[in-house]
Image (cartoon, rainbow, N blue to C red; front, side, top):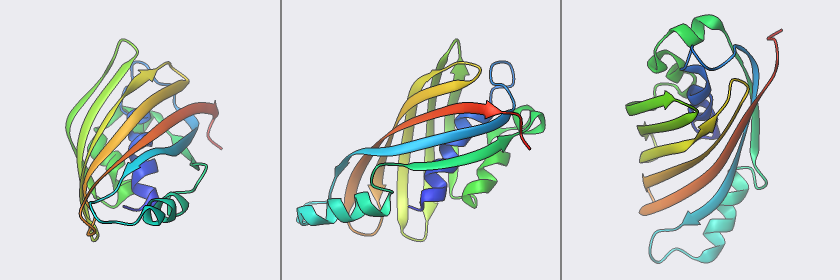
Length: 152
């Protein structure tokens, strides 16, 4: 799965709750915490995937406008080239829960996000399970975000 899809999905969690999240420039950091490889894969493959996923983590910035906050999550998924779709999304009382299905040229993944948020930060765990062409695998990410200020 492409890095953009992972970061784009994390950004979606920020941008879909107009009543709680402040518009502005947001920074997202996504760090691969754990990976369970398909049976028979050599352990070195996990290190290779960690390297492809940014090793110590991937950081991205995204301007979240009031218009973004006022629209549905599907509109923000345009950043992932339409690879992922929500089947569940809840963001209220400081808690986030979402389930999405992602389809790319490499294969399919089911993703679950659970965590907490404030108007200017969020912290969640994102679990991805599926087959990206190598067999069944699971990846778990620690995802944090913070509002840096106004867009501009």
